[in-house]
Image 1 (tube, one colour):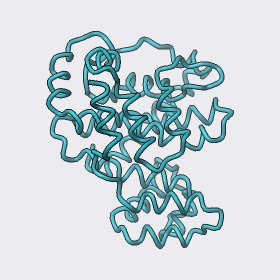
Image 2: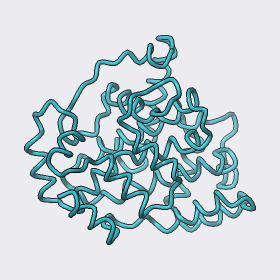
Image 3: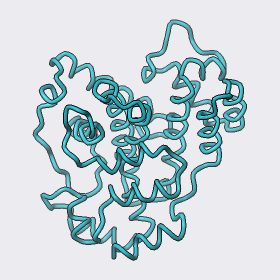
Length: 279
């Protein structure tokens, strides 16, 4: 089954294609000659995207500000070009799974949003690698894309599999490997690497997701995933596995700091979820 699945994703892009505006924004963000007006002229062609970016520029997710961003140029200046790209993916990516009636769309994307937010926060604290810090958000947002790839490639087999393992006490990725020879972490990383125009750092962080967290912050994403699950934002795909982790001790935070991270994550999930009716 592993070879069959990999052959399919190597031959064709089976998920709905990413909106063209994302690759155009990505090119502009990494072009040293880009200015704010270049980005805004692209985003103006997408009314829903431009409206949501305006909302987010003044939201609790960003921290708002004393003065409200009144136009798109002002909003982009406040957000920064890299965050504009991150938020463009946030707005557009849930559309690729909108036709999937098996997945709880709200739970799936709330978990993705929370992991992205928390991964970015933890990466700023721990990572010495600039690429990792810059791409931690997108890695968190995309870390479960392999689940969607499974559904698009082998919908009946994967749907039947999920029904069978719902009461298991093993992690989903372990059960997937036993049944298909590959799990959603590896599959998602391979798919994104081949078909999506993202940094190698995004793919690398997804691949490392199940490595143990260490002081060098090689696996911030895995810790963020566990933290968001503990907050109650599980993706509701496969068995619900609870982890008993002392997050305050792991990240060296006080209880007050830990509560602040929980509040920031929960509030930001609410802001982002409201963009597509996920609340």
